[in-house]
Length: 220
Image 1 (cartoon, rainbow, N blue to C red):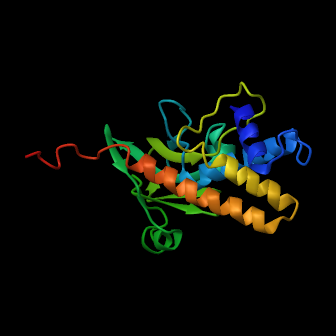
Image 2: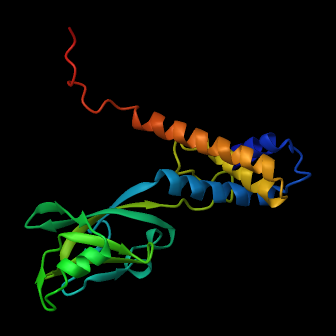
Image 3: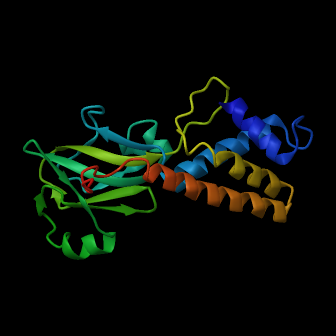
């Protein structure tokens, strides 16, 4: 897959012999572009659970979770966003609501020693910390809905976790980075605009590939 990406970018740049941009530079731009696509589209959405990772629990008395040390590898270093948390209470799943931290602080942290099962979470410091409230009154199994960045491609045999249709925009963002490097601002903007247009098109295509309810319209 890496060689395919390289050929696509070189074709866009009219540099098939790598005279203006080295293969290693193009590879770096491709990996930057893959991260950009993952961040813009949440293409690498993952569900990780306590059954998979036993340390992934909401712990009694702990309201703050530093994600770089709490999440298991490789999710702790490749995290894009926490999109949801579910706790398991008495063999039932409860989806935590999302509140801004200021709201949690105002309405759910007033009683210093109050503990119960968590009902809301908040992101603090970008993707550095997660707060849950109320403070857990016991250790709870949980499920985390997260989006991550892909691991860099180094060899052509490395697997590409980004699936179709989200592979298509990668070449245009990589070409944008290449043109930006040589300060060709007009051409850089051209490729960035192409990236935005094709990314939106691919996202829309993915969203509408599945009929949400095939029984919504009864044929006559």
